[in-house]
Image (tube, rainbow, N blue to C red; front, side):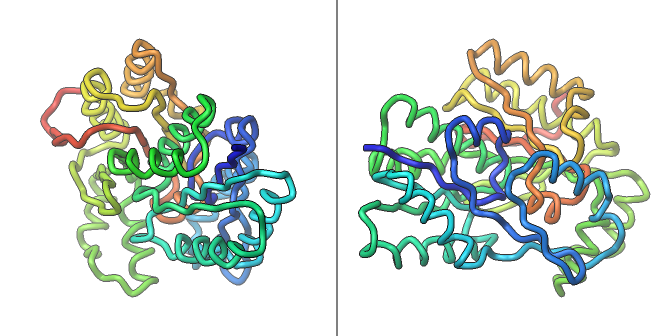
Length: 307
């Protein structure tokens, strides 16, 4: 059974991987002031977005749920290319209404096409989505398809750990203020900016938690990697680790922790997949933020561990 993987543009994977395995991407709209641009996983477009500092000018920036027309265009391409099955793997429904939009379109097409569809809630986002998608592509490469692929992917989604290091907490405070969310105090955000506090957040099963706060972005990145390395050595459930960055992706090579993590993954016969963070990720986490996604059993983050 020929199967096509479908993701929304919030999924962080290198453009080369998406192209090689013919992954279909549902564009995500980014509203900047009065205009809307669409993230289609074009690396040059994403890097330009960050280089021009669109997120740092204090403009009203937000993500948009994909329109039905855009989703239908993607599904039409799947059908025109003769696939028997299309598996949609979408950003967690707890954080976005994209899942409902994609699922609605898939169900509406059910009786009008020979192609069968499944849509799953990835229960994760950004680099976590990328790690899950890489796992699905590896299974497809081994001949797993259709509903078997869907069941295997849904089972693995419970074991996806995604982390991010926030470079600028004040950016999150301003974004929350614009959306009417007062859960992040202005004083806390400004203090974080003044002291260069860069929090580390964890995403699991659609929920998010702050697990550590360190002074300095590099220290936070290295602390995150120091926590991930022993877990990867013990219990990496899929050989792929995705690292995405809201900026020039070559900059992540400057962190000692990333170098050590990459060496450990490669020693396990795995592969680190670095990529530019999706525009949806950048809008939500802030410019210069870094995210890591991997398939791991749950573990307790240790803020005292030595990087």
